Length: 45
Image (cartoon, rainbow, N blue to C red; front, side):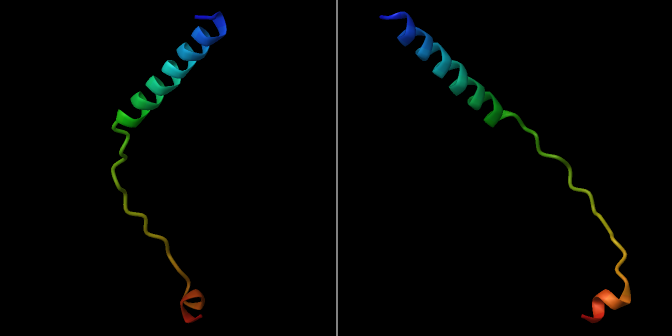
C-alpha cells in the first residue's frame, strides 16, 4: 500500500473515531426557566 493511501486511511479512522466520541458524549444541559418582563405596549400589538 502506498504511503498516501495509508495516510488517508489513518486520517479517515481518526475523523470517524472523533465523530463517534462526540456523538456519545452526554452534553445535555439542565433546563432553566427564563422570565422576561414585557411592557404593556408590546402586548397591545
